[in-house]
Each structure stands twice: as C-alpha cells, then as structure tokens.
Length: 316
Ligand SMILES: NC(=O)c1ccc[n+]([C@@H]2O[C@H](COP(=O)([O-])OP(=O)(O)OC[C@H]3O[C@@H](n4cnc5c(N)ncnc54)[C@H](O)[C@@H]3O)[C@@H](O)[C@H]2O)c1
Image (cartoon, rainbow, N blue to C red; front, side, top):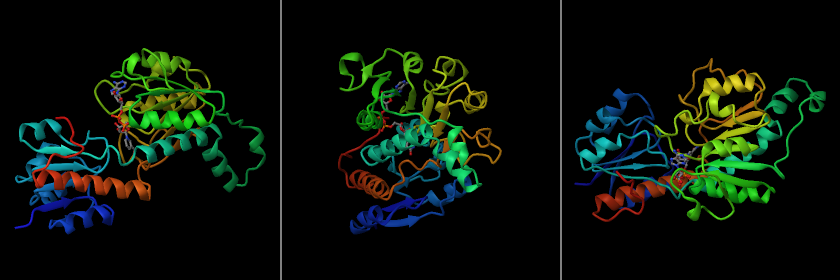
C-alpha cells in the first residue's frame, strides 16, 4: 500500500509531482486554518506537508500514523515540536528555499518605507500631487542598517544593503564576535543596535526571548527618524506600542510583512496610519520560492518515509 501524504494547504505542482513520481498517494486539503477541519483532513496521513496552519498536539494526535511533518518554509513555531519529539515524529523544513526571496522583500520594504511609496501611491490615486513636497523621503545610501539576527536571511539582506552604500551592524544571541559574518559590524546587544541604526530589520525566530523585542522601551532607544522592518514573525514587534510610536511621530515609519494575528482584525490599530507599509506574509511567496519550498518539503517527506536521513531536519 502506498504511503499517504496529506497537504492541508495546497502547494505548487513541483512538490506534488516529486511525491507522485515516487509512488505516494497525495491528498490536498481545503486550506482551512480551523482546528476541527484540520483534524479531519490529517487523519490518514503517514506524512504531512504543512504550511502556515496551526499544528498543536490535538491536530497531530488526530494523525495517529504520521511519521514525518515537513514544513514548507522556515518558521516552525506553528508546529508542537515537543509533541513530535515525544512521539518520535521527525520534523523537516526548507531553510534553503526562501532566504533570497525574503531578503529581496525586506530590502524592497526598506526602500518603499524610506521613499514613502505606500503613502504616495494612495495619495496620487486620490488626486494629490503637490504633497510630494510635504513628505520628504530618506536615502538608504550612507545610512546604518541594524540587523537583529544574522542567520541566512539577515546575511543576505546585509549583502544587498551594502550595494546601496549602507553600513551594516548587527546583534545575534547565538553568534559571538569571532564568528560574526564578514561585512556586518558586531554589536553586543539588541539595545546597542536599536540605538545606533537608521533602519532596523528583524530576522529572528519567534521564541519567548524574541517576543515583544520591539516595544515601548526599545523604541525609546531608537533615533527619531528610525524605520523598522519586520519580515520575521509577528510577535517580535509589540503592535500597540509600534502604532503609538508611529502616530506620535516618535519614529519615521515601519514596514511589516508579518503580524501577531494573521489574518489581522479589520480594525487593527496600524491600518489607519499612513507611515506604515503592510504586506500579507508574502515575502516568501514568489513563484520561484514557492516551487523551491514545495520541492524541498516534499524531499523531506520522501527521505524520512524511505528510511534515509533528511537533508534539512529540525532539531527537536
Ligand atoms: N516573512 C516570511 O515569509 C518569512 C519567510 C522565511 C522566514 N521568516 C522568518 O525569518 C526568520 C529568520 O529566518 P532565517 O532563515 O534567517 O533563520 P536563521 O535560523 O538562519 O537565522 C535566525 C538567527 O536568529 C538568531 N537568534 C535566535 N534567537 C535570537 C535572539 N533571541 N536574539 C538575537 N538573535 C537570535 C539565531 O542565532 C540565527 O542566527 C525565521 O525564523 C522566520 O520566522 C519569515
């Protein structure tokens, strides 16, 4: 009997073709984020290929035969990893599939926030023109970019930023000075980065330590024309504190690809502010990255179910 792979939120063909060619039976789910729906959809799975839906213990327990959960992407905070460890379920992910795409999106957001793209686009459509003289943009050239997290994405952002003439500094809780990537100036704390940088870009996972890293206290350390970019995870920024800072003009602007609750509620405090740019957790959703994420996640499932060592295991 063929192994069954359930894909609750659909992926592009390349990953599904990879599995079908190797004899797997594939079921694509409805895309629902509802736990009861997910529990029904995963019931038969030997392998689960997951995207952004939540996989708490109760959903994984509803798939009693599951041996591998493979994440289409990088962040694994939507999967109960402790449950997987206790039940011998292997978790794999796709860390090499989207770092370049997220880095491009991050730098795109830096440029867009600094040059008022969102505000100007909305205004021009509403008949404004002379407001171009009212809202001065900011150059990236000659400015300091501060990175929190200098892993795969942070390093790629640093590389692109250097081409804009930016000086790049960073802090990483697990990368000491003697192992700091070339081209990024080591700083010993996040606070030091917040105080010195003109642009602050977050590239850390969602953990108890990174929750609310950007909050009223740390915004208080920043320059008055600082721009914050978050293409990492929503909870890293305290959104109420950020909204307050943007409203009062305490900082210049912000650009966020991720929010604490996704999708956000329609009356979210950031929505009414002109100096914030928002994208719908789409940094990694280029056509190329979608294909790579699907393929790499499928490769993870196949490795585990065929008894090989996966190339990209998540440490449990
Ligand atoms: N917007 C998107 O669509 C999207 C796509 C991919 C990844 N991401 C997010 O981007 C994050 C970074 O991805 P990556 O591929 O660069 O991961 P990575 O693991 O290569 O790098 C993360 C870095 O953060 C550091 N870090 C961990 N905890 C820290 C802390 N408390 N303080 C400072 N540094 C800390 C780690 O040491 C590591 O160097 C991911 O965790 C994910 O949440 C978002």
